[in-house]
Image (tube, rainbow over all chains, first blue to last red; front, top):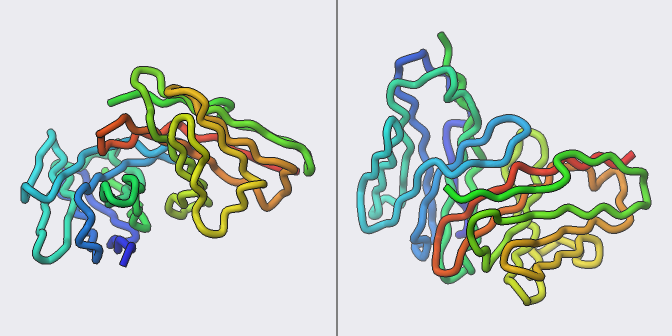
Length: 113
Length: 115
């Protein structure tokens, strides 16, 4: 019940295209859903996050879509750039579990020229 | 976003020695800090949660006597890997959050290699 399932495992997108990564959860107590970007040899960086009271949040080229009834959320990267090539992790947490993050398995994104 | 630092960034040690890793929140008070371990091409595995001034809470399967965590101040937490062995070689990452906040900010990680 604590799992967060993430897909796809890897993704190749052409420069300028849209990258879409999906996550699904089971624990209805989760109330915070962040996305992290990680480059090789570096720590994860908080990219964007959403609470379940909204269905979409946009920050620049990054958008989270959230479907509470389906218990799914996704990250859209518009106008993907080679510099976006990294591993992306979705995560979820709830105040009831001391805000511990449950991470997805990660998606390796490669943006080609 | 808030800044979290880790020191050292890379450490190589001999089997049997102890290694201390520091995690600092530079521009906010971190009431809670988390320590993770990450193997190559895998997700992050939470090792323990520490609240300032309290004993750390370890995840199931993590040896508390092996991985000593101290969170003595609102800006500093330390992880000591005691009597390190080659199987302890990994990428260790800390994160920090402020009171009442959801956001967790991660440090740059420490690459530990035990020979």
